[in-house]
Image 1 (spheres, rainbow, N blue to C red):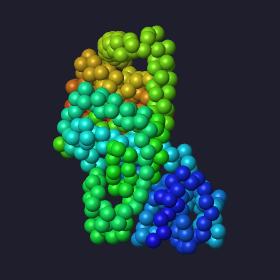
Image 2 (cartoon, helix red, strand yellow):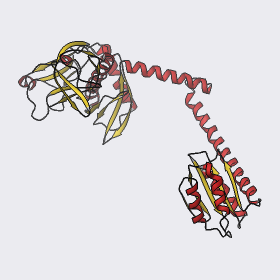
Image 3 (cartoon, rainbow, N blue to C red):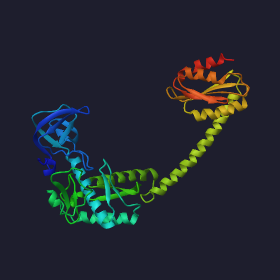
Image 4 (cartoon, helix red, strand yellow):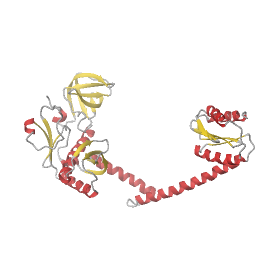
Length: 393
């Protein structure tokens, strides 16, 4: 079996090859090539992206032993040029090699075994069989990884026979059932020897740096998050930019940002309490004003208020006007609310009248006691609903 170009020459960015098969699956055209520099998803590493001719490649998968390149357009034929999205590939190489180094050092230094790996779009993680690592352990692990990156240890890949594989001390979770053929090993000199089919950098120095971001408990173990390489620099840049904006907004230093935010949140809570108290007073005053009126059906509309405000107004109204009915609305066309309320001595059938109002206002409603409430999508028909109520006894 020919070893594909992405494994033979992982730093190759373009090549010419032949289309040997075309087809369609999952609503997309695909091609199988005689050779490819595009890595198919597997082993925790996402698929590469690129172009075949002028057609973007959206995904790469191994299906029935063949590497399918799923396309964003029609499948080309004959001799084609394959271009690799190198920035994406190198990012994956940094994250994946970083994972190998992280896993190996975590096992050797702390006795933590990696049970799974996920290379995410922004942050990657490994799952460990350890529970609740301490902050000191995480800091020590990160320092040890940084030392191995500075050591610029060579990273190499090779294939060995099953017989040679059996004689080697290899970190592995085991080969797939029914596996045959040679075994691909990735080695970080002096640190790790591991079974892996992914793409990797040539030296730990090319990882550039690795930052452990935090942990979370999962299934009796721990998920450990990290970023490496260019992602680390982008993350630091984003944090710095965000901190600069916060410093400007809060008028404080980086060190005082947490206390500054806490103070603002306390102020916001105080303001929210004050607003709520004022809204209660406003609603009560509105209810009293409506109760003092003489209309057969009292009515009012508040464009900037909500259903909760209407409910407060209604409670005050029915308390002060036991013989009368009120139609209250709030909001705007398409997303309004209404309340129909009646005092305890009012003779109107509130449930029937409320359903009629809901129908006219293009909404639904319900209620119990002396209040019927609901949503309204056609507040432009408010006058029609009011006229209907005025005809009721």
